[in-house]
Amino acid sequence: QVQLVESGGGLVQAGGSLRLSCAASGRTFSAMGWFRQAPGKEREFVAAINWSDGSTYYADFVKGRFTISRDNAKNTVYLQMNSLKPGDTAVYYCASSPSRYGPSYYFVNYYDYWGQGTQVTVSS
Image (cartoon, rainbow, N blue to C red; front, top):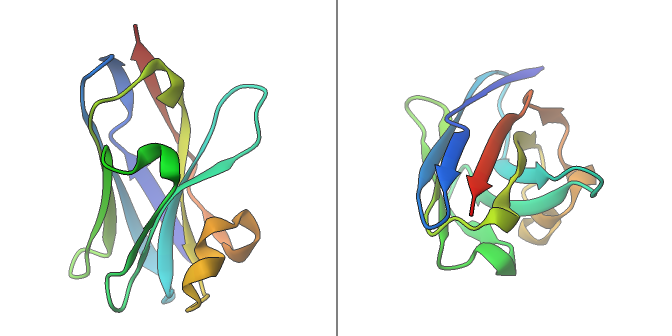
């Protein structure tokens, strides 16, 4: 199993920044991703990173605003979120994937372990 513990959510004004962290422990994995889910909406892909080579993947709506990174020594993935908008309000989840196939990272079904989620609220 993989245990994932997220932190860093909170309330921020539009245009502000937050950094989410997700610490992983347990068995190894090939990639880590961030997803988000707003009330009444499906969980959607935000960003992912290949743990081995650091390749990154982003949803179009966060390109240029969010950055995913990793610290292999700490087994931690980060999501730096800048220029936040009210539409970014959601519960953010990190997840681990055993897949080494980059295009799979966009899809919920390719992740097998999930964190508990952290609330991000952006006020206008």
